[in-house]
Length: 68
Image (cartoon, rainbow, N blue to C red; front, side, top):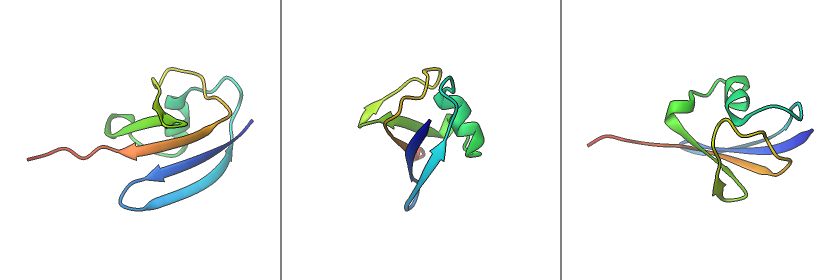
């Protein structure tokens, strides 16, 4: 299954990817070498749990910045 991934982390990086139909968002992050503890994943603007199966929609990965 093909999906479009947009990574928002100090800039914008977009790429099209092929993933298996039973992949989860957590597995997608592993393939992209992204630590799941520092990002939020959105599907069509709605946050998704990492254990949910990837849908054939636009995926946005937003890096979360914390600190004081």
